[in-house]
Length: 326
Image (cartoon, rainbow, N blue to C red; front, side):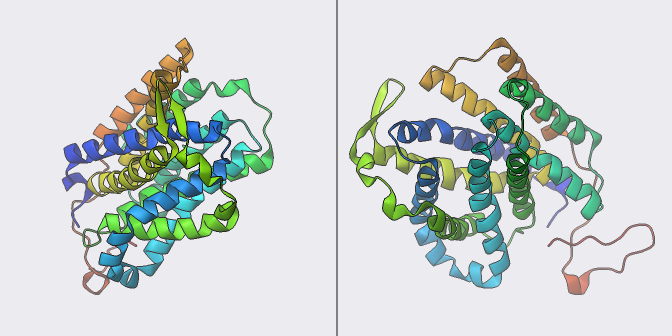
C-alpha cells in the first residue's frame, strides 16, 4: 500500500463528509422510534440487524474474507459496531448525554496517541491542532459545563466507547487494499447483531410499532421505513463511506473530519425536529468545522515508502525502524 502522503485525499474527503452526513442523521431518524416507546437498545439492535440483513448477500459473496481475516472481521464487529453503541448507551444511563458524547469523540485523540506512541510514526502538528480545536468546539457545542457531577463508572464506559471508536479508524487503516471494506462491514454487522441480540432480547421488541405512522418533522413515515433508513443509510452506507475515507486519508485525518458528524446531527435536529441552536452552540459548530478542516489538510509526516510483506521487509537500521501494518 502506498504511504498516506500518496493517498487520494480529495476523494477521501468526499467519503468522510458522506459518512458524517449518514452517521449524523441516525439520532434524528431514531427519535420517532424512541418517542413511540421503543427501548434505546432495541433501536440499536434494529439498526444493526437491518444493516446485517441488507448486507447479507455481500457476506455470502465474500465469505473468503472471513476465512482469510477472521480476527479483523471479529474485531470490527466487536469494537466499532457493537462496542461503540453498547458502551455509549450504558454511559448515558449514568452521566449526561453531552459529556458522554464528548468523551466518546476523544477517539481520534486516542488514534493520534496510538500512531505516535505504538506505531512510532510522526503526526503533523496541524493534525494535532485540528483535533484539539475539534474537541474544544465539541465542548462548546454540547455545553458540557451544564453537568459536571460525573459518575466514575459512567466516565469509564464513555472512554471505553472512545477506545472502540478509535478502533474503527485504526482497523479501517489496517484493512489493506486487497480487502473489500463492504465485506468487512457486512460480517461486522452480523457479529454485532448477534452480540447485542443477547442484551436487547429482540423477541421482546414491540414489532407492531414498525407498522404505525411515526412523526418526523412535518412528515409521517411508517416505522419500517425509518428502520430501513437507519439500517441502510445510517449504518451500511455510513460505515462503508467511513472505512473508504480512512483508506484514502489516514486514521488521524479521517478522525478529525469525523467531528462533522456531531454538527450534522445538531443541524438536522434543528431543521427536522425544531431543536434550535444557542449562540454558544453555533460558535462550537464553527470551531469544529475549523478544526476538522485543519486536520483534513494536514499531511501526516510518514516516510514515503511502500509497506512490504513480512517476508520482504528490509531489516531496520539504527535510526528508522521498519513499520508493518497489522
